[in-house]
Length: 182
Length: 182
DNA sequence: GATTAAACGGAGTGACGACTTCGAATATAT
DNA sequence: ATATATTCGAAGTCGTCACTCCGTTTAATC
Image (cartoon, rainbow over all chains, first blue to last red; front, top):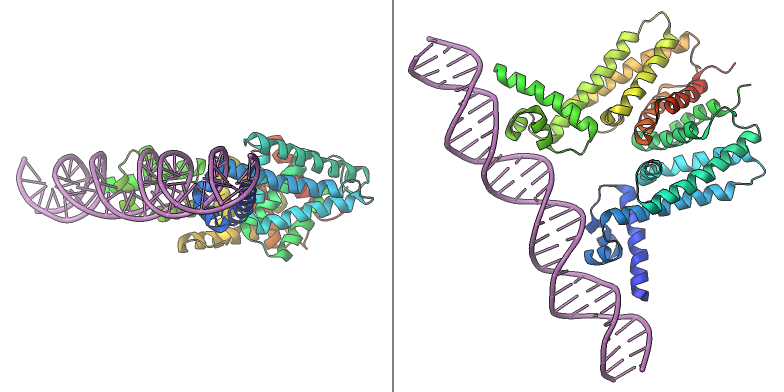
């Protein structure tokens, strides 16, 4: 692949991540303009708008997964789990698309995105079971409902445009529900 | 107002509620077709699509508020509060727009919808404080974060297409966080 | 039942967005 | 430096959607 082509592809991805993060309904032209390329260049690299969206989404899921993997194996699994949870929710607030991505991870999506979603959930599941083994999270809480909480908290925070204090108080309530009953 | 006009207006509202509930991005033509009227008739009653959306949203908010008011003054405020919470979340699942409406209730929207949102939140707040006085909900949980939980649970359930069992387990976790610490 | 004012439907209109075409430009290999 | 294969961007095309115009129909009044 030629150097300029590679450059442009990267620039388009970055621009798309930014634009769709702000408003998921944005047009392809907006992405092209921000990337500083022509529209045709966008469509040469990503045959359809859906394909572009999926590439962005996959990237985001992989980033989240990587963060989870970094925290895996921590010597304080409880803190690791709750810190990860908070980080994801905090980022959703400024980046609408992450919440969408989290949603799509479970539902229908392209092949790559599905795979990335599975990887991310596996990493999160690892954090959860470690935290449970450490006694920081109740053992009768299973992955599906805990993951649902993560999605809900993310989407709720994003949708309601919560200020950080309210968001943290909401998270505190959720965390109390996740902790083992004394 | 003529009888046929009143009829049509009602039919349009019903159709819009249904159509937008299924897919918020639906076109005005879809609404007209389902209502069995011409497009022009829709626009005669609602000058713009936004106006129609707002009317539907207002109606939904008022329905939710009414349910809250019905439960207000129950002799078991704790059950009343949690039952209301569960009902709202359960309905969001099948009716996408309710979650959107709950969101919009806080954010920018038309005058009528804003007013309806305030009324709904006031009714919910009443349920909350009653439940707190009855000792069913911890007193250090305030309206903003509890409302955020309601929005989050609704949007999460809708987005993730949770099956009822998972949804109930998620709600159980949330409720445990809301109950007074033993 | 005739009158008429209001409501109706369906064929436009203009704007916008996804995607294509094609001549100009440019990176790499000789 | 030149050749050429690849990439680039601007100006299209096509379909969709919110909204309008106007001749026709119909509910209410006499």
